[in-house]
Image (cartoon, rainbow, N blue to C red):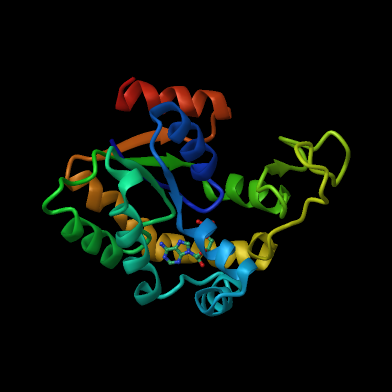
Length: 213
Ligand code: AMP
């Protein structure tokens, strides 16, 4: 099963992608995670991507498309995968469609729909663990001990691109460049609409109900 997660930054795509990856036993591929790992390792790609990410802008397609096409061609993707954060532009979507011409197009584009106000609230409260990747929210999913990761004990941080100004910019970028993908996949009959304001569990149940056990 090949699934794309659509939705604004902070809509909960990543969380749902992880749950779906466990359920269907297919890899979760997050371009944001790949870029962050490269930044951490200090690679050339990481250095280039960081400039754009810190500004709330999209990393150019030249640095993004081949990376994903290569990743989904690997053996662990033979039974499918969940793409989280890609495609983010019509050009990326078209490149993906072309790349899948022979092996078969994606099965579902899951659109996790959350209004902007709720996104701003969620992202400004989001905290992540730089050591193990666990994700929290100061109000909705607090750590047991303030500021400390429940899972590994490291100090949790706010991602640079979750800061208020950057969040607004990322939402603008989303509306301009990524939202048109909803129509792109709707026209292909692949779009599945999910109310992302529900609890994490209910969002997951709604997705599974629509795409099948
Ligand atoms: P995310 O973790 O998906 O919210 O991604 C964080 C940041 O990584 C985004 O704001 C972009 O700067 C960059 N990024 C992630 N995926 C893509 C993509 N498909 N195309 C361009 N930039 C991306």
